[in-house]
Length: 305
Image (cartoon, rainbow, N blue to C red; front, side, top):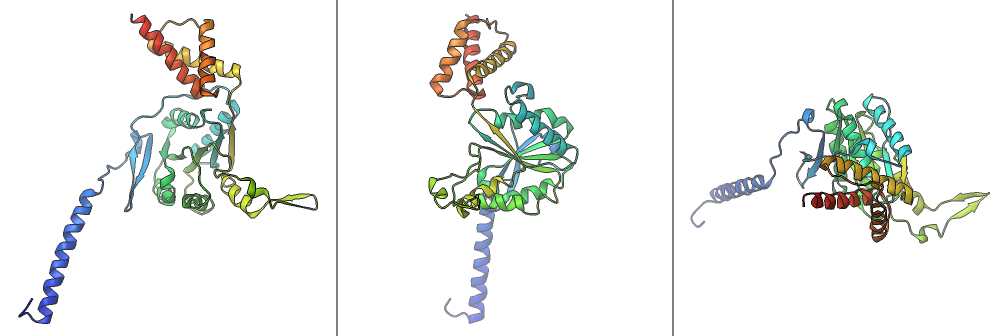
């Protein structure tokens, strides 16, 4: 820059920086997604996506076609969640719900079945992964402006003790965002009742005073999150006969769908269903459905020659 005055040097430097900044911004904008607006009238379910700059709804490509009638041996849990959902649909007070317990026992399927049962009445579902829990306030703010009722679905939710999203969810549930959004409720599923791991060390300093058991602050902190859910529903592994009844249900349903002839009184069907569960170490609805797919798929191939 020899021969230029000081003010001219600064002017050229500023111009160069502005041009470079414009190029950087253009490249960043090219990397950002260009999501299409969600039309909830024909979109029953969506997933929340987010990056460092913003978040958006993505229409769920395919929703499980499970119906409420497919969920056997969880009648009490089903009835309670149905009643809570109908309150939400009617614009009445409804609770956030925590569905916890053994894997594969119908927790997620129950929520999908609710959507299938009530989508025609204006129920919509938004799935939020744990990594986006911090966006919950922003999500609810957008949904509150819609004329539909929403389940914000957090599937397979669990946290480590120092996980920052744990406190984000707790803050959202005890904050004011849901007081201004009567059309939104959180339904979460988890294998843990309190959503965070519990250790023996947490109980070492429990004390008894005047006949009352007083928990430590560590225990109180861990159960405080699940306490923010007004409705707790627990799920347990099936007994053997219950498991076989669920196998029978799915075998019948899949046989009708694929026009397969099966002998439901076949002792081999019963024995193989039990071996299938034994090999996986659990009797539950998911295991029963997977076995039915195996049995009907094999029978369909045999019928085709």
